[in-house]
Image (cartoon, rainbow, N blue to C red; front, side, top):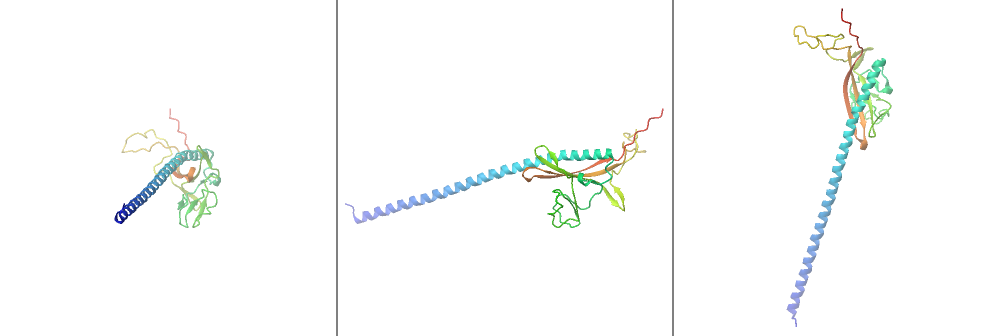
Length: 235
């Protein structure tokens, strides 16, 4: 027959076992919560990595597509030169015979005297502060493979001073041919072969892709305003 003392000891041991089981359950729940948080963090990390890689891929697409848009802009210059249409600005074609000071290419400028390119064709209404001048690129967006689109703006590198155009061109140019262009003669140096007088043009391209990927590309090119026919050799 158990005594009062032994019964009290039994109750104490039972209470201790229940306390141990309660502490074990608490640690198990804490471990489960920590594992759940780690799993959520891992999933978010994988999703973020995939998103970054995807955005980089779309960005590379716009960079590659901008080369095609640049080629089309240069084709416009070649055709315009052949047709004699490069002496006047054509806003619908995004072509201007003046180089604009303080040109804001991306639309993020804050100088009130700047000239901003109106890529959205909305009159630069979102610009803050408003620019001094808003110039439009080519009106019709270029369709590039893979669902991309692009617009360009071409400027003849000239400044208008009292109605006279002062244009930027190569520092060393000659409007006649020379048969000694490859000769190393330091006493009588010769110009490299050059036909016509060159003028610089500035081409700026904006390419839009998926997920709001945008790339701005710029190039300085030059064409010859005229081409001289080499004189026939004397007989």
